[in-house]
Image (cartoon, rainbow, N blue to C red; front, side, top):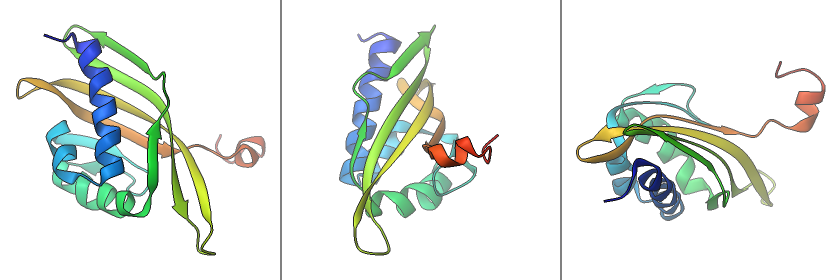
Length: 138
């Protein structure tokens, strides 16, 4: 039986595959029904159905090659785990040219239905250096 740390590492790779494959069924199995999410599209979303509708369905069909970094920070305490990872994907701009979307994510996983499920996610685009340098992000 995998440890919570091992299960969290596996969870991240499975979620990456779900995003890449636009596999909403797998994504739903990986999140708790009462999960809360902050996203790149949706500001704050409560409940799995809303996360799928307001975040995933607005983003996953529009991106390509979604990938988490190879060495995310994964920690476990008791039967709960958390993940912090950088990610990137590709999209097409209004000018028709592809561009890279770098970002970062945090996931909190808790035991539900016999395995770890995400109870909170925060997925955001990486702040641009120009915004950070000009103090626009605090």
